[in-house]
Length: 159
Image (cartoon, rainbow, N blue to C red; front, side, top):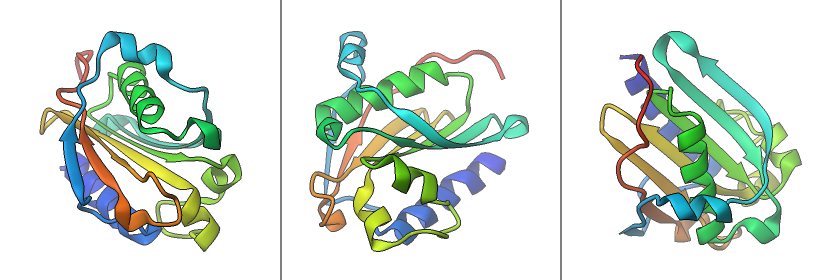
C-alpha cells in the first residue's frame, strides 16, 4: 500500500512542479548495458527513504549540457541499477544543483526558476514491472515533455 501512495504522491508532485502527469509523446527506449557509459555525472541534493516500504525519492543535479535525452535516459537506467533493491524509486533530475536542493516534494520552494530547472523525472515501480522517464527538452516549456518507457526494471535483490 505504501508504494501506491508514493506513486500518487509522485504524480501530485509533478503537477506542483509544472510537469504534466501525462506527457504528449510516449515512446520506448529500453535500458541497455552499453548505454550506462553515456550517463553524466550527478550530485544528490536530497534523498528521502522509507526502508520499510523499500522506496526512495531523490533530487539530483546534473550539468545543463548533460540534459539531452540520451544522457538523461542513460542516467535513469544507471540509477535504476544502482538502486535495484528498491520497490519504488523516484528521481527528480534538475539541471541546476541549487534548484535540486530547494525543491521539496511537498511543493515548498517550487519557484519558476526551480520549475524550469526540472528536466526529468524517473520512476521505477516493481509492482507494475515498469520504469519510465518523463523528460522535458525545453525547460521553459514543461508542457512539451515526453514520456519514455524504459522497459522492465533491472533485476532486484529480494525484499
